[in-house]
Length: 394
Image (cartoon, rainbow, N blue to C red; front, side):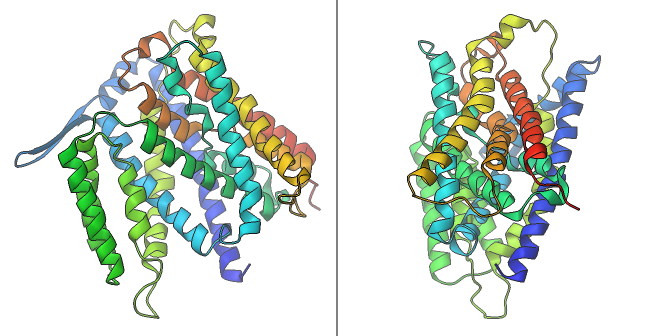
């Protein structure tokens, strides 16, 4: 690993950790407001209608949907840029570095989904939430790791980040194939035309970012109208922004845009998303709400399923000699990290909003209860295990 790569990773981990702490504060603030005399103001804020109209084209959504469909598209743009960089030039460019976190990610998606479906079998509506406990929130997880200071080896942080990247790929595929509504053919044609234009621009060597962003905006509007979830526009756009500039001494367009977006995503977009989606009112919540198949399946999927899936698939891969454990990572520290993978907060909330947004049964349960309980247990127990397993620094 070169010195520049090392400094980039250190900057990335520092920013993600700080962003995770801000996420916690935004979430706590939302919960406090939702359980105070200001609850009506909080609900009024997130339900405020926002309308943007240009001629006959009209987008009318409550503020919450603008955050979930609009701001999160920017988040997915950054995720797409990170994926592209990691697979072309980063930690995932070499096959031997992919296998261990890849196996962990597969186990961390399969086992939680199985646990959730087992607890909600026979309930077609509840089963729609099977993907909620499959996600890992890298900002939160790295935020917990940062509490352990220099005791955490860089290899462990790289493993966790790589696994979360594979998790993001899985989430993107899940959203694309399972959480789309009625399809508008005309809007799909417009979005497809945007993809062709982006491909042509990339092929012709256009390395200015603004034309890509303009076409990406048109594609996002088309996807909003299409029935395919609009956040996928960010991922598709990222795939066409060039990694290398046409001129030798010019900065990489993809890396430059990723750098520009990182602070905004970590310190504005994700905290705003958490604030708008975490406001759970505990008024009237009893044991029957907690033991409903949806929140229980999510909590157990995140806390139990993630640790079994991630650790179990990694252990199996090493025992079958498909991969090997990095020198700086012990089995106990790997297990602690597998626990942290159960912090699914941001992506779990996002997938939950997609799973049940049209079901009309939100009054029967609140999937956010399961997300918060599962993520909280995973974070606390993961920290305790890592605190005991990582060697003390002099």
